[in-house]
Length: 272
Ligand SMILES: [Fe+2]
Image (cartoon, rainbow, N blue to C red; front, side, top):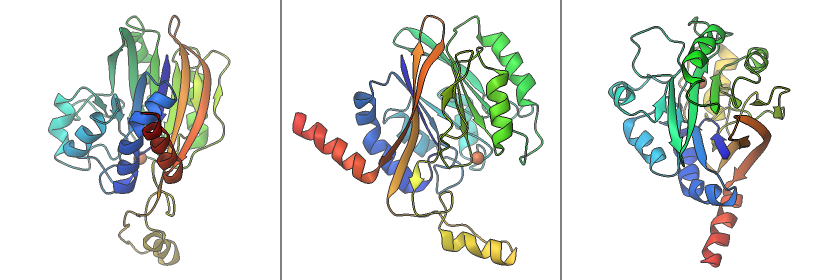
């Protein structure tokens, strides 16, 4: 089984590039299951039901979210009814949505968990002890489990990866929007990367117009950040999974530019 994890989708340019190219990536990389972090898909912050539906109808199997999961009020009811979208599990009881589920992928059960870090982030429940609890619930259903760990600090994400090594199939870091080059299969068979990267506008500060961000650093005063436009880049990883025991056998980084996407689409057209 081959699983694609796509890094944080930001704004219109990220959405447009991903929805245009994802069906072709699925074919070219022989992908069976797609997880997309969509917590910044709506104009850079949060996600709306319309955008979630758009992603889910263009090749995404599961949308994962993070600290901006609830920014758009209209998503709250959707999180309660759509089982293909997950928010971080380690928020207090009663928060809309759910942080773990299992999905049927060609007759094989795949578990997905979302957790959020606590270093330089909101003081929420412990993601380490939460994952122990969630794995006690899910592990008898399937050995194939992926975790989107939405966190700021590299050290926390790496520590979490080793903490669950051998107990989950993959840990994908998200939130910092810059793809790290530390992808590896850990000794126990867990695929790991500190940050999958961003699917959004290239010429930006983590997806925002740089001239709307720089004044904050110059003055310290509050300022509004605007989502950048222009050519986007898809950042993702592909994990090869041994379905029988849920171990990862490889992890590969992907970066697909607008030009790469155009070439891939052209190649498909000429083959038809
Ligand atoms: Fe985030």
